[in-house]
Amino acid sequence: MNESKAEDSANNAPDGVKRAIGLALLEKDAEAEARLEGEVEKILAFVSEVQSIATNDATQDNGKVNIFRNDVVTVEAGEYREKMLAQAPGSFKQWFLSKKIL
Amino acid sequence: MQYEKATVQDMREVLAKGDSSAIDLLKEAKRVIAEKDGEVKAFVEVFDSAEEDAKRADTMLKEGRAMPLTGIPIAIKDNICIAGNTVTAASKMLEGFVSPYDATVTARLRAQGAVLVGRTNLDEFAMGSSTERSVYGTTYNPHDTERVSGGSSGGSAAAVAMGAVPLALGSDTGGSIRQPASFCGIVGLKPTYGALSRHGLIALGSSLDVIGPLARTADDAKLLFEVLQGEEGQYDSTVEIFAGIGQKNNTEKIIGVPDAVTTVGISQETLDAFNATLERLKGKGYTVREVSLPIMEKAGAIYYIIQPAEASSNLARFDGVRYGYHKDGKEVWGDYVQTRSSGFGEEVSRRIVVGSYVLSAGYYDAYYKKAVAARDAMRQAFLKELQEVSILVMPTTPDIAFKEGAIQDPIAMYAEDRLTLQANLTGLPAISIPMAVEGLPRGMQVIGDYNSEETLFACAKDIEQS
View 1: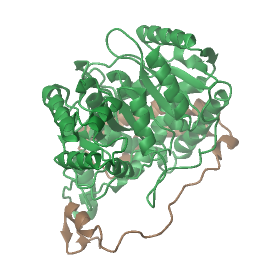
View 2: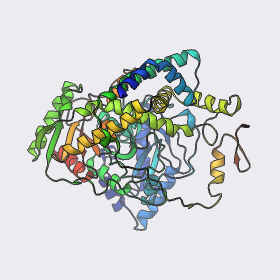
View 3: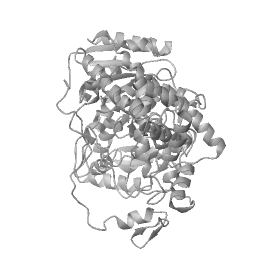
View 4: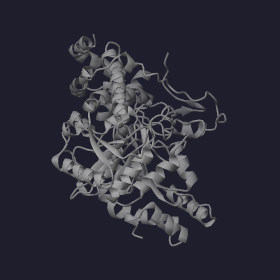
């Protein structure tokens, strides 16, 4: 099942890579994109060897969970505001600036 | 005391006796940098704040409040946050970014009165094995400035190797402390995953990243590690799941050499040095056995799925809105795309795309999910062998440092890490120690069970003294 999925992936690689470039919020000119696609395809071919590694359900469920810190606020309101706004490419009063979304 | 070769202990003695002050040591650091760093290019910036650190340290010394690292000059990899100082991960994406907070390790060093001399060069966002892929240019090997220092912590390794500082901090996600340590002839430790806090480390692969010490001796690396260890406070990201697991500090001195050592393509000179070092360790009471770990050779296939996947997630935060570089596009979406497309370097872009691909619908099962399962299979294989032997040893790198520009193919560069990826995938601690060789440095890597850093340091000292 996994093998055929990987083969499908290999066959679909150009579209999959193009889509991945979009998902990564990247955009290149045609030449750079073609080069990036070629390089990524090579890397994907390199890692497809992972299919040959013996695994089973037991190895997949390793019982580890994401560890979260306690959801407690320890900074005073506004303690870092000036420092952080000073780093922003654009800011207005206490807000980060970005273009209108809607 | 010859500053370039002095250990931390040497420096502590002269400071305690009053023969030198922290300001004097900082002057020495700056002298070495002025003499050598024009060629080596380890430091991206020498901090103005270092003077204040040194003054504070001298006050602590005068008032009898000296701690182990008081007054000791330390270099910090440019992906670890220091409040009030620029940190960029060697990327255009963070040009001019001044950190509003201290990393946990930084805060610990401040509390010790250490002198943070400056930030050191790295491959962009810690992705690389040569420190050639930095927005600041290449860092060269102090032993041969036509060759690379290794990566991604090449700047930190070179800073220690050239004698500018006795200690440096680096980060290790796939070998980025150990490989440059091997290339530069110094000691580099990758601690057990979770042993040191990652709070304030610019994230690359969060299940793989660790911060660790680089030094010229095992004792110096051990001192820095012990000072930084352990949890602290609200933003702690130390992990206890490995605490209490493993046989920790095994004094049985049984060495396992994986069979992969003979099959992964290590140079004959490195193998000769490795075997000679093993012989000397036998003289120190170690027994050597061959162990079977064929899965070691699959590390690249597993790692270069998981790490890009995690990187694509961690680097999603760089959108030009809250910090760093911004380039305008059409509408909000265009801003993100233009910023990221021109802000990230080539290798970073490659890995983000690979990561997005292996996590995307239709490919997730075959790539990422499979890689996670394979990672666990590797972990189990290593833990099984570590029940029979105390430590696993192998060369750290396939050969000596390569010449600048010698490796252009991304996959050939990834292959440079084929002996170091396993410790990050499994979370196990691993140290690189220089072997006694003619010519350019070669490191030996020692891997132990979780939380067995004591055992690693003890073996490191045995190698140093043999």
